[in-house]
Length: 317
Image (cartoon, rainbow, N blue to C red; front, top):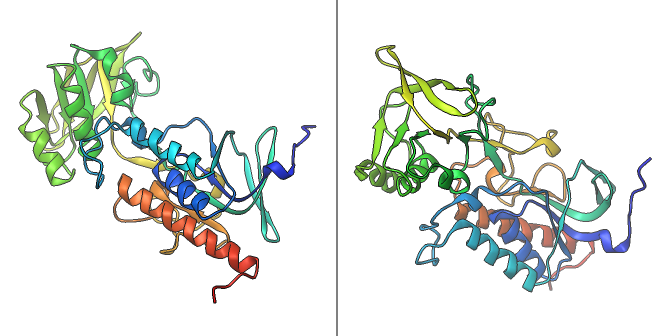
């Protein structure tokens, strides 16, 4: 039997799961409001970490990398008193007014919990994708792009991430092709216009990838033209897939979700369980950006603070 370590040092006002923009914003606002805040990281990186140039966050100019942006946010949260821990939480329970979170070796208790675990890349689910993952198939251009310098690169997708990553990859190779199943990109106008103007990236529309071929590594992709039904192959050394995200909601499957599996909250980031909040890309909303994630986190921390004050019988006069 595993002996759980529970002590006063493991009791908090607010525990935040996830250290992306939403979680770090909440940590800063919560700690600054004199809450005892713990951020639990489990090693899964935020989408923001993979941003090559964060150019549309208000006030951050010139652009910085997503990694640098997150580092600064964490340093800022720590300066206000937030603490950080690496752990993989297996369960969240609530007895009375207190939440209990358990990992394999520790138990944490908190008056409030914020789920800010974000989302992870959606898989295509085609032959060769899983078999060649890490051997030419990637979901992160800034992580793996340098391995394909001057090689044949395929980017799959038509949203902001696909277009941004194709732009970055075009700085590493002159042989970059972006494949999208629709007739036009669905990225924001400024992002789409930038990739359309980039003559170093070949654009292939109305096309789906049916298979990724290769033995020890990626060698080619099999594609189908959605208008003509024509099947063909395109040689490739690297395949970068950006076809959407899947919310990381395993710990809170009991909460209501929208059709895409994202957690439904109100404008205060509250879920139907009092004291339990969701913020950032895991939350159901119409627009997912770093700036909306940070706003979610700030609102969640403020809501948690109000909830704790009410729990303690504190009122403003």
